[in-house]
Each structure stands twice: as structure tokens, then as C-alpha cells.
Image (cartoon, rainbow, N blue to C red):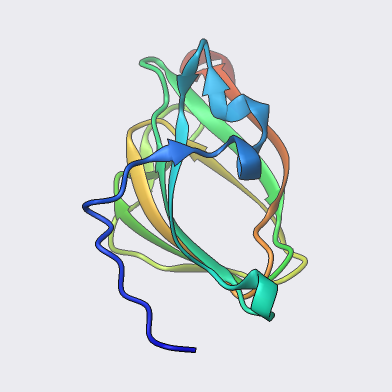
Length: 137
């Protein structure tokens, strides 16, 4: 296979419903968006994307998933939060969810993350938008 080069700045954000399910849309707006950088699953490889989370004001996006392959996570902007909406892990870090690992994330501010899967992407068990006050209770 030849090298692949993409200009992700020139790419449009697209709906993430295909991967995250119907709850990637909230009140008619895409709150999870993707830029798929490469998808080599048909050749036995993985998939890489930029994902943008856009939680509504006063709310957070709560995701529960299981890694179907090793998932490498590089937060570039924003980051994960606590149930009360306070920052927990910001940009500049790295995380690995090994294949089979159940995991979760709460996101309360606009967040952009580079995610690289060795094979298939996560199985999203649930994704919901919750009030920050209700999540902290």
C-alpha cells in the first residue's frame, strides 16, 4: 500500500451516528462529529479519526463503551471531565484502552481527540446527554 496523506483542515466534519449511534445527535444537532483520516479495516488494518464532541451548555456527554481492538486516544483540545463538569484529563495526554476493556468518558466542553484503533472501533454501549447538576448528584 502506498503512503496516505490527508489535509484534515480541508476536510468537513461529518456525523458520527454510524459509529456512536443515534444519540450522537441531540435536539437535531450533531454533538459528535468525525473526520475519518484512514480506514484500512477491509485490508485487516484499523481506523483513525478525529472526533469532536460538542456538548450543549450546562450538559455533558456520557459514553460507556468496550474496546473491540486496542484504542489509542490523544486529546488535542478540551478533554474529559468529572460528573460535576470540572476538567479531569486535558489536551496533551495519551490513553490506551486495550482490546476488551470496558471504559467510559464524560465530556462537558468542546473536545477534539485523535483516536486510532488497531482494528474495529469501540462498541458504544450507551451515550447520553445529561445535566451537569444531575450527573454530580
